[in-house]
Length: 86
Image 1: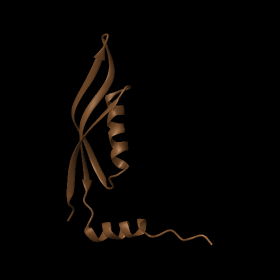
Image 2 (image 1 turned 180 degrees about the horizontal axis):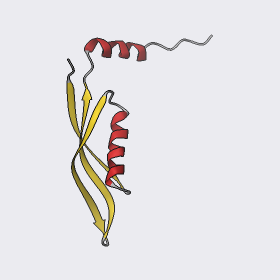
Image 3 (image 1 turned 60 degrees about the vertical axis):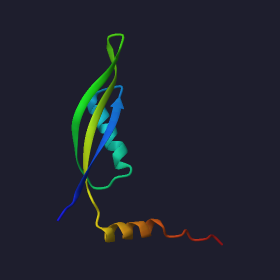
């Protein structure tokens, strides 16, 4: 059985809403494993002098929750002490 979690994040871009979504996914991927989907909940833009200067999104990202055993094993690999140089 798979257990999923959903988080809501905000992201922006000076290029497009698609780029803002890519930025959201790229940042979330730095700390979250097992991302399954991204849902764009809301889009808005900042306008200056009649032109869009910032595209912003509110997104929901869905990802798998790891079982405790798997998470502990991964932590143990990361926390191994470095070998001392002689």
